Amino acid sequence: MVPEGRGTFTRMTITENLQMGAYTRNDAEIEADIDKVFTTFPRLKERAEQLAGTMSGGEQQMLAMGRALMARPKVLLLDEPSMGLSPIMVDKIFEVVDTIHKQGVTILLVEQNASRALAMANRGYVMESGEITMTGEAKALLTDPKVRAAYLGE
Image (tube, rainbow, N blue to C red; front, side, top):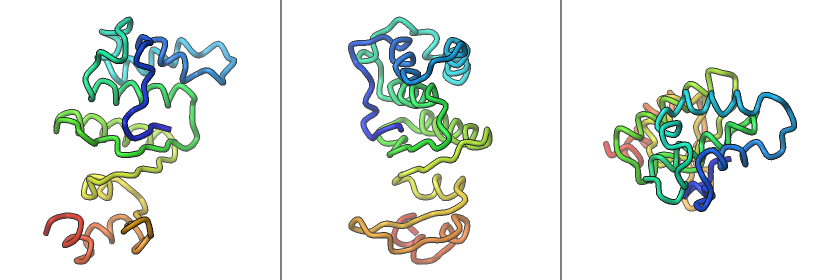
């Protein structure tokens, strides 16, 4: 799970945060998975010994996602991964989400950037005041006039 607000261990290094993501694992491939995270997010590798609390919001988001991947999840829950990030970082986050999904991981994405989320999703759910008001194939929701008017600014 990648919570809203990232939830990194601010007084631990990037490497230590990634190791915490693998806390429940007991196998010999943890270091290899850290290398995979570093390949996905090269910026983290450059700063492997930096304290997480001194990183930018985008870097902390990359770390939070990397830490979640260290658990080798079958389902990855992402809560507002693009919130407060620069457009370049938003592109990177959505690119990584798409890659993770293509590797066979189911993604549950809660996201206010409805157009980006629906463009890559299989299914979508529209919530208003905590209640699901619409559901369906993401592509259909993306073209629905009600969704476009209310959530896509058209």
